Length: 439
Image 1: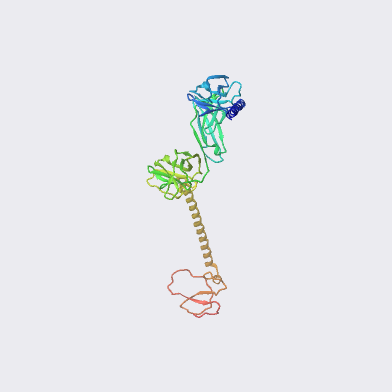
Image 2: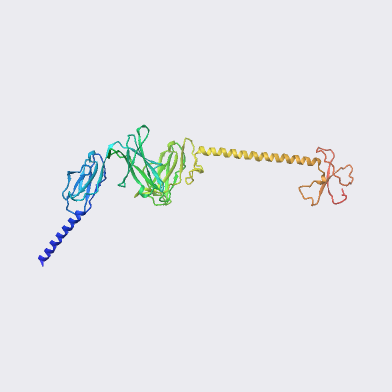
């Protein structure tokens, strides 16, 4: 029983070794670099040769030189350390198990820091709305014919030939977009020469590209009044009903620095207070705030409504209604623009009032002329009294002279001049429907 069992185990072990040998003979190797295939000058990098077959010895070599590197040969080891790297370490590397086996795909190792770093900028800005585009511009005062854009979260590179500018400067533009979740992150750019494609400049300063519009916007307000005197303390408050754990404040599209953690407000909302310190004219501008989460630092909410902050040298501060933080940006104009509109509105009102008064005077003058003409030449019987209809009962006042007291049939006569008289005058009511009237 025991000899049979031992024989079976031995046979299985031999078959396993044979299978592993066959797998290892035709297996495709792979090579990777940690922490990155872009290695600053003087730093170290570890190259890993990956294989499914165990207990193998691997060899690492450069494809441009096609020579074995004795210090990079390992026995039962699949990782190799390069460094401190020099310009000679730049190039393509491959690994294999033996001279007859298929090598891995080539891996490019780049040595950076050989040249002076370029600069990078985002246009129109690093805060990009979802679906929009952003242009990253690499610029160098040294003439290079290649620029490389690198996203830290990606292993790929974008390369574009540089463009000559006046004065010997060189630049290249990279358009990123439409903006999506995969487009955000930290970007750097490098420059190089076509004659030395594996030797790059030092990395530029980073630029963080952020996407907005992924959640509901917060609200922004000023403690007290958004129009303050110079020297007064200014504090802006960003609050939201959403569960953001940090808030960002921007002035005229520029990020003012590190985000602030949100806290519970008395009304139950989350908010963050941004103290700007004693106000100066430099604090004047249009402010916006955003909300985000610490585990997704590149994913921001929609922008809050704009808030215009004005710091003046006046001894008093007022809060005009146009400074409500929930109004639109167009309504929150500077005081100089508001004064201009007030002047124009005043001129329009004055012109309209004068036109109405002039029209009233002309109408009154025309009415007076017509009345005088009627009083001088129109028969009395053709007139109406108090605007009553002619079909109504006609009532006429006749002039009686106390000296005669004689009854006479009414016959209209021209009106007497309006002047004082020594004799008393009596006006009596007559009915024109009767032939005579009693005094």
